[in-house]
Amino acid sequence: MTKLVKDLMHPGVIMCKPDATLGQVAILLDQHKVHALFVTDRDGRIMGVISDFDLMAGEWLSSDPESLNTMRKLTASDLMTKPVNTIDANIPLPEAADLFMQKRVGRFLVLSNGKPVGTISLSDFVAGLSEKIRSKRDMVGDVMSDAILVCRGKTSVLSAARAMTSSGWRSVLVVDLHGKVLGVVSGHDLLHLVKTGVDEKLTVRDVMHSALTIDISASLREAADMLIQNHYHRLVVIDKENPDSFPLGVISTFDIVAEMARPDSVWQK
Picture 1 (cartoon, rainbow, N blue to C red):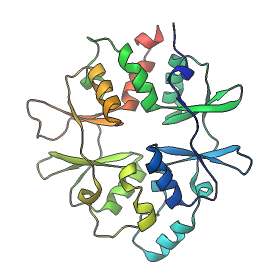
Picture 2: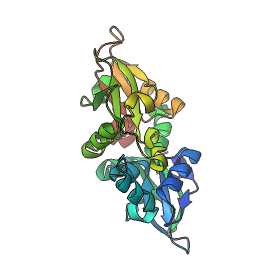
Picture 3: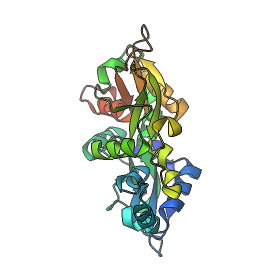
Picture 4: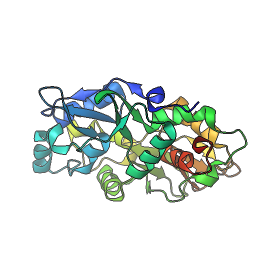
């Protein structure tokens, strides 16, 4: 029996007011360990959505006092994305997979009889995918992204943030002189800087988190399980025979959802 969106969604909707400062948005995102909040008007109607990526999209990551002062005056309504992408709770998951790929979004607001009842994100999707992946199916190397965004450990946070924004990537890999992965910088790593601003001397080494790696020949099920268990959105792909060499690519929740959307996928039969 085909599962529906309501079977995988995360019940409930985490919201904020339109006049919430970016600092307050950052605190809520961090407290709830989520990537986005839904912005509501005074009557509780959802107006838009603001994500960690939206916070990065402005020029708020600046050591310039004037820019920092301007950033601190911005509110959720200034940076939110609208309209909100919605999906019905009773849509089959194969159709939802297609919508994720068509829209290229990280989440949908789930509606039941026109009312918000939860959210479904790529993380929720991959959690449900784990049991469906055949044990002898495609490997990580077949679906990973070969293109990756990298920087050296001495790169300034400002430069990394601007590169992420201009490229549309949600993270950047930090490597040493020989290409060995030192860590990853994501939108979540930069959230606390919304309140404090950025010292121009701050480097990616100061804010990065550890990277999770997976062998290029590992199965998709192994990749999905690792993403779920560690609450990560991407894994660095390496050659286990030479783990300290330059990374081969990255496999993310988007890559796995793209595999689900293929016509020959078990989810499409």
